[in-house]
Amino acid sequence: MLQKKQPIALYAALLLLNAVAQSGPLFAQTIPSLRETFKNDFGIGTALNNAQIDERDPQMTAFIARQFNMATPENVMKSALLHPQWDTYDFTMGDKLIEFGKKHDIKINGHTLIWHSQLPGFIRGIHSKDSIQTFFTNHIKTVAGHYKGKVYSWDVVNEALNEDGTMRKSVFLQYLGDNFVTEAFRLAQEASPGTELYYNDYNNEQPKKRAGCIELVKKIKAAGVRIDGVGIQGHWHVGKIPLKDIEESILQYSALGLKVMFTELDIEVLSRNFQGADVGQRMTANAQSNPYPTALPDSVQQQLAADYEALFKLFLKHKDKVTRVTFWGVNDANSWLNNWPIRGRTSYPLLFDRNSQPKPAFYKVIATAK
Ligand code: XIL
Image (tube, rainbow, N blue to C red):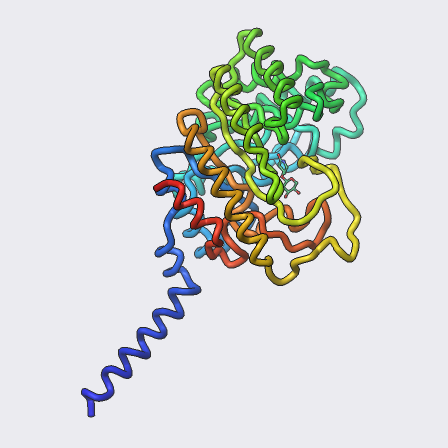
C-alpha cells in the first residue's frame, strides 16, 4: 500500500515544485544573471524607484541584487526631491539608496546635479542672476559633498544641449551663460574629488548633437576641469536603433579619453510623434495610442529581441570603451514609458516582463556573451 502511494506523492511534489519554479523566487534563481554574464565586460545597471529603494518587496530586492551591479535613482536624487526649499535638503531616500547599494554590492550613479527638469518649485520665483548662481553653487556643493565617497559617479549635468548641438535655453544658460557646464564640473570635483563625473544626454549619438557634446567636453577639459565620461541615455525605438551613429559616438567620445556609458536604455514599442526623450514633451491620447493593452504581438517581440541583440553585440565589440549599460527600469511594469509621453499606456521596453520574467530579448542578450 505504502509503496504504491509513494510515486503519486513524488509526482505531486514534482508538479508543485515545477509550479513554484515557474512563478516564484526559485525561478528567478534559475535564470542567468546579467551582472554575472557581463562581469568582465561592463557594469550592468538599472534605475530604481521609491518602492524598490525602500525594499518593499523582498522578491524584487533579491531579483535586483542578482541581475544588476550598478543602479541609478530614477527620481530621488533630482533637485526637486533632494532640495525642496531654498534652505532645506531631504537626503532620506538618497541615503536609503546608498545603504541598498552597500548591502547588495551595487555601485550607485548619482543622477543628477544640474538639470533643467524636475527642479524645485521655488526656482520659478527666482529672477536674478545672483540667486540662480547661489542656488547652483549651494546645490552642487551640498549634494555632492553629502554623497562624497558614497556614490561611485555623478551625472553632473543632464541634457544641456539642443538637437542641433547648440546650448539649450535653460534657466542655467539664461542666467549663468554657457560656462555653467564647466562650472558645474569644477564645483562637483571640488566637493567630491574621488567621484567619476559625467555629462549625460539623449540623442547625443546623433551627429549634430554629438558635435555639440564634443565641443562641451573640449571646453571643460580646456579649462583644466575633470570630466570622466559621457552618458548616452539610449531611449530608442523598436526597429530604429541608430547603430551606426552609436558606434561612431563610442569611437569619437572615447578618442577624447572619455568612458562611454549607456545610461537609460529602453526600447519603446509604442508610437511617438517626435524623437528624443524630453520629459517636458507630451502627446495627447487617441484611440490608437495604446495598441497592446494585454500582450505584445510576437512580431514586435522578435524585433525587440533582435534590436537588443544587435545593441549588445555592438557594446561587446567596444567593451574596452563602454564601461556601463544601465536599463531605465527593472521590468516593463516599472518603465516610465507606461506614462510618457502619454499617461496610462502599456509599454514593453525592457528585458523583463511585468512579472520580472525574462523576455526573448533577455535570452538574446545573454547569448551575445558566448
Ligand atoms: C524620468 C523618470 O523615469 C520619471 O519617473 C519622471 O517622471 C520623469 O523623469 N531622461 C532622464 C531621466 O535623464 O531622469 C528621466 O526619468 C527620463 C529621461
